[in-house]
Image (cartoon, rainbow, N blue to C red):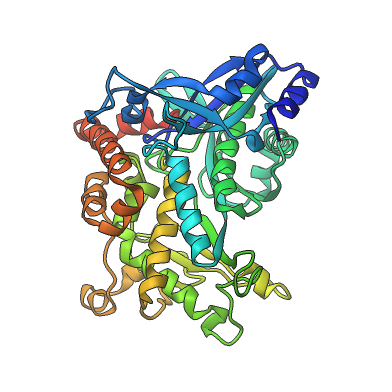
Length: 453
């Protein structure tokens, strides 16, 4: 949409404020808003934001990053195609933004621009990534001492459907009004835990959608007097919240096999192509570093435990929900269309642009180098002996954010993809968050993460 069309839609909906939003290195959705009177002008010139905001951590403290202090600014320039009226906020709308320099060039520290670069790299190789996220979250109420679950229902139980029916119906209606197609919903394992999946889209739109879902669920929940938490482990004694990424690779327009699912081969093992196995090989090779982007908070590593179906090892398998990568069964009659990979070690503390961009960079490296992922695992890898895991090349994922950041800094493929400025800013922000929580008890860590994500 052009700016005048956006303005017309905003006027017709009686919008007063339009939020210019982005997701920062701490995984927090932030932004500023313009009054509708200045909307067209602001869409062209952006809204100024200090460079320091990309060194701002989720604890609202500034990490030490050269060039990201009190001097200088970038501009938040919205993507008009992301414009939506917010059903849960009166007279409000929003757009998601890119970060541009004052010279009107993409800023090297912009996560959305990073994903765009990875999408362009894939296009040069003749492929397009499609992706979707499984959104897990808890509905809860605040208490004088913390938070309590919204209900006590069991996993997938009809009681859970009934308990949250009014809230979830309003959530789905709000998502539909913003153009998002809901695929499935279910009450999940934890009491008060929900899971919502959205229809797949190209990688950039999938990341945008992840932010839209977070904003919408939290906004609608607030209208009902409850809190929605996407934190990785909001309740230490209950199931964690994941943001499993389902992805597939398709032939790009004009390329060989245009419009064809490149992961699918009816003659391949389990219907997976050789390219698909190479993609898996790349993800597994970079996985210890990749989780620094996809499991991006200290709280994340309380979720990534063996035997908890959250994935704790560099393993993959067919319908193996303990694998870091699960190859789901294709749907009958839609095998070519529905073949995809599920990446499990991801949660909503990760910036979705960094998560999807990192996943794509790792997988493309596997395709370039034709990496062999080894044999699929058909049991819980945590039940294998250390010797057997070593023989199969299966290693434990990092058990802390610091360990994951060490792996990221040592991974030349991912750091080259991110670029030096985004790498240094991201690592500095995450090191600051890790230091802040290092001497905090687990209960305080969980409490502080609860409302941030």
